[in-house]
Picture 1 (cartoon, rainbow, N blue to C red):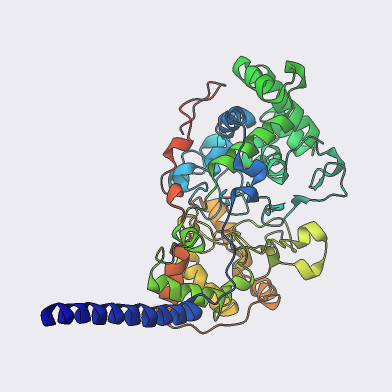
Picture 2 (cartoon, helix red, strand yellow):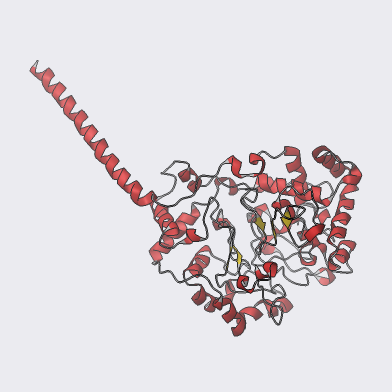
Length: 460
């Protein structure tokens, strides 16, 4: 009886110890949660954040995929949307500035072309990634936001086309798809090379779109797909329909909210490491990255001047035309000079080079630039620019940067102050940024079709 009582007493003591351990452990965990997670973190991404609740029509997606990779949309039939936004380069091209119409190859192996077909200039701005652009909060497109939602416009959007923009575009992502085909450097080609290039050079955007539509109307497989997806006759097929399909493909295919950080926001507190959690605290607190990189996709969708070094040919601004005034080009307001749209940081580790002109070639370099932008601007090492070499292009690549007056102007409108972080803190911050990489974005090979209806080659 005594042994039984002792055994029973021991069992009770063990249970009490377990209860005490769980209680105090709970207090410790709660205290840690208050320390680590008392931040203004975004809500987790949900289906309703995307167009059509992320349930695009499969045939529309298929049509958009064909069009995205079909060189028939270009003037000389030698470049597609996918050339500068390729899945193997994480929907970018891996270059600081794109090599558009006339170049050869893909990604960092792309050259400037040869002979009469060679490019005449680099595309002035970095090829942005296309992740999550199907989220409805992305209401502005391009680095300067020149395509944006505008309920007061007849089409529902403001764009360089003004009232010539078609009225049937589904969303601002489709609006964006209307314009690369009208750019001589990007897809149309140079005046005298083809009809599309001539129309583009004359500023006849409607003519460009109609010319491309006519090309598509003459390809039976495309006709069948357009009729099935949009319920239109052959003669009614327009480039606006094509843009809607391209937007559907981009939105459905490159949704990326399946990262460790997303798992963390959905309740799995073990999804990111302790080091990344320290970086998260820096991001949303001391380093104040979240001041601009806010919201579900780490962007406020606004425009900021952060003393980014200006490289490449520029956009025709300034006395010599080698500058890029950014948002001012759209608004006409000098207070918007050198302001560019805050990029989303989803998959940021995959999408270099970084900056509106791809000035920085490592993620650490662009992070450190934010800590002291003016110092970084003046100390910028031009060797990190990823620019396929050609002597005449090389001569103008750093004209703006090497001009003290132009560089001082960029510095004078900088909005960011300096922030002191130790090397250890920078390392923590980088670990947090790594948690924004979507697991479904690590292998995008399946996103490339093996063929396109035009019969033109898909692979460069």
